[in-house]
Image 1 (spheres, rainbow, N blue to C red):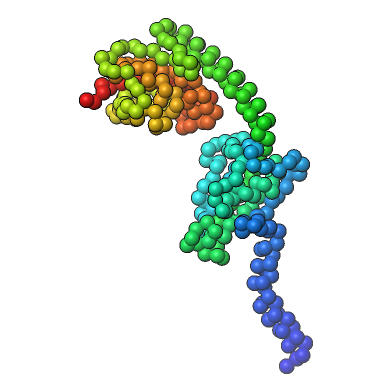
Image 2: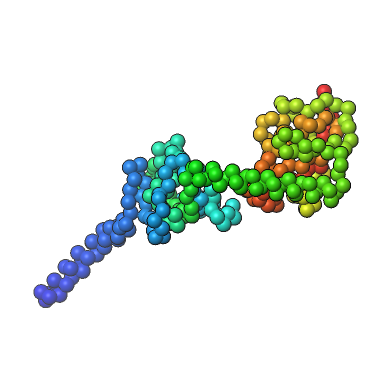
Length: 286
């Protein structure tokens, strides 16, 4: 056999054997590992602001994929263009992907993989859960609280103006406001007792915005709604406001955004929306 041919075949055979090792080594290139076993790569944005520490507030997006690359969760479904807000704090779990935010700066993105056996007792050691992270903004706790207080005061003013305009437009005069800023009006008076915390209340209602756009209507469903007062089964404004009424009443309750969904957009309800409920409280069951 030609010695040159033999030499070439030897190197080719050796290369084939080493190829999987090269692929594995290249795949590991750039990955760092935390003490808990999380592997990550950070792609810097060039921002030089401090990295988040526990107690800060961050705005981020997070996508989680299963070991077979099926999407399990994606914060973008919330349609939050500014990112999802969260307080950055120590996780109660031994392994948590949010740990990686400590290695990121504003604008950075990251790829993360966590061995399946660390998250799932039946998971394989050679399989991973995959994550994509994007850190959009970071605020220190004191700065965040100051900004939040200013935003709350501004929104309270806007809510009050919207409520007064609604009352005037609809010529609603027989109404009152409580110390929480909830406006209520008893339109017809039932013969039952006052609604109290712990009661099970059933009512028919129309929920709408101050522009008269309805977001819910139990009459159309022909299905009254039942909840236990004081157990946080409904938004706080309804939970508190219903206690101004009596069984058998029909009435109206206007809820400022801070006692409804706040700055969150929820279904057909936009962010910072004042909500109007017109309802009939069913008689209390004996």
